[in-house]
Each structure stands twice: as C-alpha cells, then as structure tokens.
Image 1 (spheres, rainbow, N blue to C red):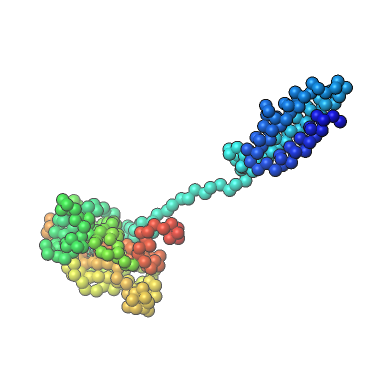
Image 2 (image 1 turned 180 degrees about the vertical axis):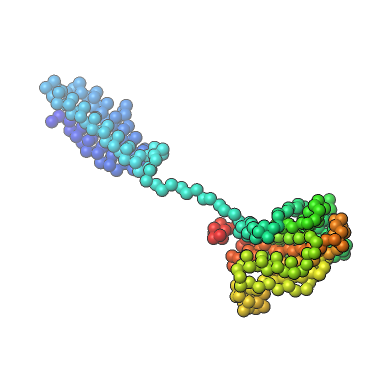
Length: 339
Ligand code: PHE
C-alpha cells in the first residue's frame, strides 16, 4: 500500500466522522472544501498521481476514485440529514409539524347581549331604530323636556364639543328623532353607546351602552309598560325573575319609575351583588310626558306611550356574572375568550 492510498484511507475515516458530527450546513460545506475543493485533499492527491510507479497506478487510481465517490456520498447524506431535521438550507418543510391554528374572534359580550335584548323585543313587535352618538343639545335635552338648569347638562357630566354639540348622554334622543320622522303608532328599541363624565369604577364607565324603548299608540298604559318589562325579564333571565317599579323622576316621562329585577345571583335572598336588598336596579321608564309629544308634533290628547332605557352593561354583568364592568373594556383576550 503506497502513501497515497494510505492518505485516502485516513481521509475517508476522518470524513466519515466529520460528516456524522456535522450540525449545520456550514460544517457540511467545510467538509466539501477540505476534500473536494480546489485546494482540497483530492485535487492535491490527483497532482501527486504522476509520481506513482506504473505498477501501482491502477490500484491507486481505483482507490482515488472510490474514495472521492465515497466522500461525495458522505457529504450528500449529511446535507440530506440536516435538511430533514429542518436546520439545513432553511427552506425545509417538516410535514409532521402541527398546523398553525387560525384564531377566529367572536362578538363582544356587550354586542351579544344587545343582540339578545333586541331579539326579545322583536318578538314583542318592536323594530330597531338608531341615532347619532354625536348629538345636539336640542335632541339630547331640550326636546326631552329637560330644563335649562338641569344638572345633567353640566360640562362636569356631559362631554361638549367646541361647536356646542355633545356626546349623547342617553339613548333617549333617538325617541325624539323617531317621532319627528314617523307618525304613530311607534314601537321601537334603540340600542347604542352613550357617554358621561363619570369617574370609572366597578359599576361606572365613561361610555356605556343603553337600550331605549318607545311605544306610542292609542290607549297605551302603565300596565302595558309593566307587562313588556316583565316579559323581557322572564325571557332574559328565566321565569323566577320578578320585577319591581319604584316611583322616580325623569323630565321626559310622567309618571316616571325606576325598575328593578329580583337579584339573579341570589334569587332575591340578599347577597353582595344586590347589596343585600334582593333587588337590582336595571333602568328608568315611564309614560311619555305630554310636553315631549308637543315638541314632536304628536297630539297628546290622542296618543299615549311609554318609554324605557336600560343599561346593557348591567344586564351583561348579571347574565355572565361579571363582577367588574371594566373587564368588559380592557379587551383582554383571556377574558373575552370565555364567552
Ligand atoms: N334616559 C334615562 C337615563 O339615561 C332612562 C330613561 C329612558 C328613563 C326612557 C325614562 C324613559 O337615565
């Protein structure tokens, strides 16, 4: 065995070890450079071939060709191995990896609840009306019979724009807009966003949602109001929920009431949520004040009606047992995913 064949055998042993150990494409490339590259081992051996005595040429040539082929094979195998492992040239596709799931969102709990309320009222014959979130003072206050010195008009409580318009503080202006543009009978609900300059806490936000209701026809009475509210309560929270009307005051209804649901959490026995009273305040309501009818050109001698406005957040808190209103607005996916 001559020196060249010895070198080839040694090279094969080294290359086999290095090919097995190669951890990245760079290591494989280095292997190629060292053995097959222009300044590598095999081209150098090929130049030495001329000095081999003629009787050894055949054997040496065979060893040379076999060795070069073997190294080529080692390099290809190492490259294939790295590629399969995904760390090779970078464009490897590992078909065994699980796919990336497409995360589909869903409606916000407030929207879901507003939709549910609307569905209940639609079954009672109400249709949906809408009004602008940026309102004028006339529709938000004056037409609703709210006196000029009423505290709710205070800039401390209401967001004013420089041009005198405001962010609506209630959905009640939708009542006015509907009556201005439609003759009775009217039976609408108007869900929407409203704005007040409250300091946010567990039960107050600077903007929240209301659903307004208005029903105007001949001979509408307080009994109709009560029956609609009771039906709504039962449809939303089941047959055990009772309602209670308490005398109250609103400039645009007379008489006015606030209405409560028996506490959904404790069934009326008393718990921290209802502050141990057994009742939870849901909204304001009343019979439309004749002064409001006069403002929209309805004849108060001919038409009567009721109106109500309730807080959707409140309803959502009860439905989904959410302890703090602010959770609804932080848009933390871990929270929202639960609905
Ligand atoms: N707009 C009133 C409020 O925001 C609620 C209300 C609506 C009361 C309709 C009576 C009639 O507090």
